[in-house]
Amino acid sequence: MHFSIISVVPELLESPLGHSMIRRARDRGLLEIECVDLRTFGLGAYRQVDDYPYGGGAGMVLMAEPLVNCIENLKRQRTYDEIIYLTPDGKRFDQPMANRLSLNLNLMLICGHYKGIDQRVRDHWVSLEVSMGDYVLSGGEIAACALVDAVGRLIPGVLNDETSALSDSFQDGLLAPPVYTRPAEFRGFPVPGILLSGHQARIDEWRHEQALQRTAERRPDILGD
Image (tube, rainbow, N blue to C red; front, side, top):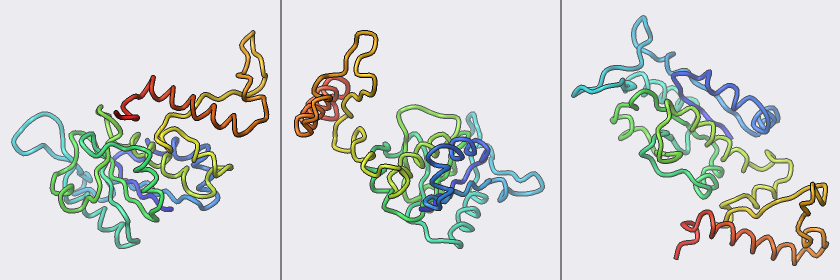
C-alpha cells in the first residue's frame, strides 16, 4: 500500500512514521510512504505556499496553485484511490473508515496548515475529507500519522499476528475487554479465574460480556438505543 503525504513541514512526519510497526512494515515493503514538501512547488524565489484570505481575517491560507501543482505531479506517477484532506470539519474518522481505506492501493493525504487550504482545491481535487475529532490541531501532520497507523496496521502481514487487529476496540462495534498477563497474582490482585481455566468457549463468553459492560459504561453511544 502506498501513502503520499503532502505537508508544509514534512519533518513532523519523520519520527512517527520511522519507528516501530510502521518502520518494520516499510522495511518489508508492505507499506510505502512518501512525504512531499509542498514548498517544492511554491511560487517565486521564496517558494510561497500561503497568502492572506480574501475578505480579511486572521491567519493564512494555503494557496491553490502550489497545492494543485503538487497533486497533479503525484497523479502523473500513480492512480490514487482517494485524495484525502485532513480537516476538523471533515467526516469523523473511525474504525469502519479505516477498514475501508485499508482495501485501497494508493492514498494521498493533504495536511492542512494555518487556516486551511483554498476552498477550490477542496471542491475540485479532494475526494474525501477526514476529521480526527472535534478539536483543532496546528496542522494535519499528527492526524495524517494517526490515519496511516490505523490503516497500515490492517494490511496483511504488518502485524505479527494478523488476527490481533480483529479483536481491537470498535471492530465488532464494542470496546475491547480487559486484558491480563503474568503473574497470575500481583500485590494481592489476582487475574480473573476464568482466564486461567483453559475453557476457551467460557473465556470467549466472559470477554464478550466484559466488552458489553465496558462499552455500556464508557461509550453507551456506540450501543445506541
